[in-house]
Image (cartoon, rainbow, N blue to C red; front, side):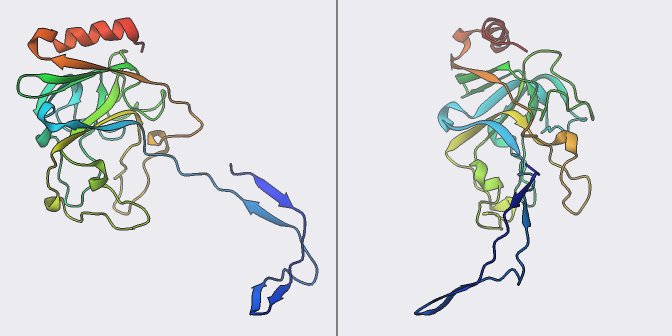
Amino acid sequence: WGDEVELEATQLKSFLSSDGPTARVLLGARPEAFRIERGEPSSPLRVGLACKLDKRRATRMSWYGRGPGESYPDRQASTSIRRWRAEVGDETFYYVRPQENGNKMDTRWMLISDEQERGMLVVAAKGNGGRPTAEGGGRGGGGWSRGRASLAMQCHHHDLDEFDVLLPSKSPRFRHGGDLVQQDFTSLCIDAAHAGVGGIDSWGSLPLVCDRLRLSHPISWSVILRPWAGKESGEAGEVARALQKRFGGS
């Protein structure tokens, strides 16, 4: 990408049909070489897994990672890494204009369950906290989850598309956070890499280069999904550590 391609000079003339001119392109009396320049493709904002869960088994969440609020590669200085508990419905932040929200960086494991703690345990087996690259994320309270495998995770009672603009439209589906209505499912998003959210100025500049995903950098990650039957399944943190030790790696 970003290279130049030399094409052999070709003189184009007007071509006529019975219905009139169908093409009229002329490069000049003397053909000249021309170049096509290919720009750098847009990088993705996230790489990972998204799915929908039965809301009856996914109303509560507990996790070991950054909290209590949302965190991103360029927005995490106010968070700390420890165990947290919350209702899924409380983890969606209703910005005036709906947008990306609720992410939890450096998450080693997350238990999504009902009131009896029946649901699913999500364990990071390989990952670097959800940062764009293994070298990034050193600013603003960054750093890995103490050398342990971790990913970025989030849950909502909304479809993730409700927070975004869907092509070819240039306008969001919902213009105001107050227009969003919780759905009868739970969206789970597990990200191996997540771009920063920017916000360093008021005119929409991109996140800093160190907080963007780069296509030239490979992303390697893995996750363990384990059904959870409640208290008889054990203590979530202990089970997660055992699974990481058996199947994972930092």
